[in-house]
Image (cartoon, rainbow, N blue to C red; front, top):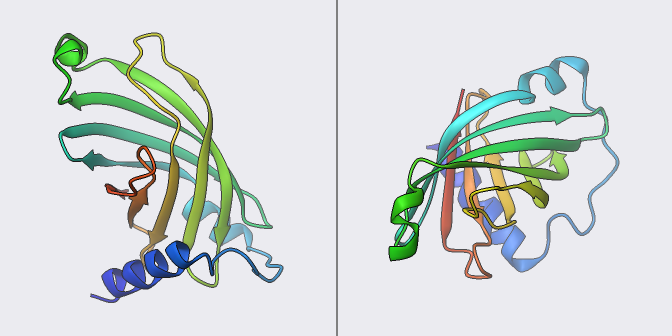
Length: 152
C-alpha cells in the first residue's frame, strides 16, 4: 500500500512541477546503484495500446541514469499496425534517479526502430521500497494517460 501512496504523491508532485525543480545534491552508494541498475520487465499501456518492455538501467553515484528500453508491440488501435504486432524496437533513455523520493525521471532521446512502432516518451516512475517493482506514468502524446509497470 505504501508503494501506491508514494506513487500517487510522486505523480502529483511531478505534475505540479515541484520535483525535480530543486533537488539537493545526492550520493548513491554502490549497493544502491546496483539494486536499481540492470533489467526490469513489464508492460506499458495506454488506451488501445500495449507494449511489452525490458529496460536495462545504469545508475551513477549522483543519480544520473541511462538505459535502453527494448519494446515489443502487443496491441495497437491503428488498423495499419495490426501486421506489426510482435515487432520490436529500442528506445534510449536518460535522466535521473532521486533517492529522496525514490523516483526516476527519464526521457527518450534516440530510437532504433526499423519497424516504425515507437515514439520517444517521457517517464515518471516510482521505485518500491524493496526495489523489486516500479511504476508510473508517461507523457504519451502530452496526455500523461499511460501506465508503465515493471518488476524484477
